[in-house]
Length: 352
Image (cartoon, rainbow, N blue to C red; front, side, top):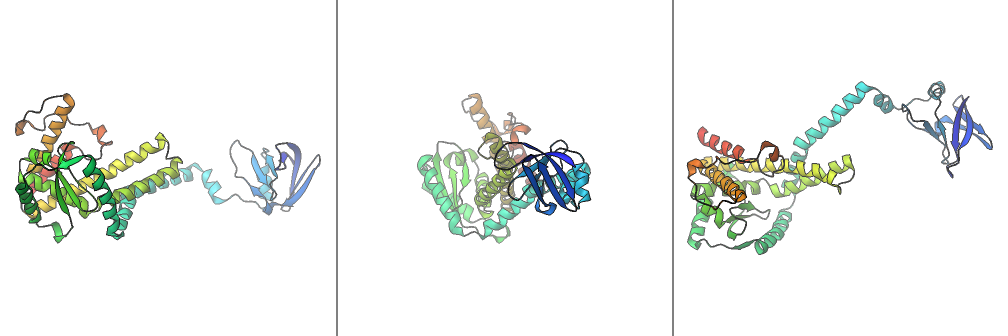
């Protein structure tokens, strides 16, 4: 017989009671309280170090027991804690479980989610990507771009040069190349509906057809690998997992890890597009160093803008000597560092 506290499930009033257990039947008695029920009908809470155990009756009433002899009494009457409870209370099993969960989360983030998004993106209808891209193109073209100032003949010449390039592995990705004047400066990007946009400012800064072609090949890589759609799918998957772990994606604390994890995926897509550009340029026997030179000029132009320096045309041999972002800031960026990309492109040239 042990002392306990009974609650009727209707009020917060505490009822001091005594609890007995015999042949699988539990009996609770106290002032105005007399209940008995088979132990198998009760819901017994798991054993914790300092908290009392709760034994719930089917009608909502429950008994709160702090007495240490309860565990022994339960065992004598055939009650056994679930195996999960035993694991939770064993530090070795808990450590193994923690390592297993972390391993699964890391593997899912690193390989599982990208693999699933890749497979799904290849099976979703092309009309979905077109619809997404059409909406983006309308918004961007009307809000941030102006008609190209490049000579029409020059645009046609660049289109023809790119169209004549052989694709890696014979792939045939449908695209449409658009030139635009832009207030955002040198840039190029691909939309999921197959439109590749190159700004006049980037053509001017490139100074070299090979640099222009390599950038276009990079953007074609984004289209060929369905990066826009995969980014959406992976972002959604990351948000679901973070929500499950943290419970509230509306808070900054929950949004920050989602943002950082998404940036890593974005950097991976850029690396994949760079590899596609390398494959395509090598397929056609063209050099990658002009694209590396272009990245250096873009980095220096950005550094000059940050320092408020008027843009003088800098000798190419001095390019790349300006400070670049730190390794730590790479984690917040959607693109790999310029140093990494330039080194990859020059290394590809060296292997030819």
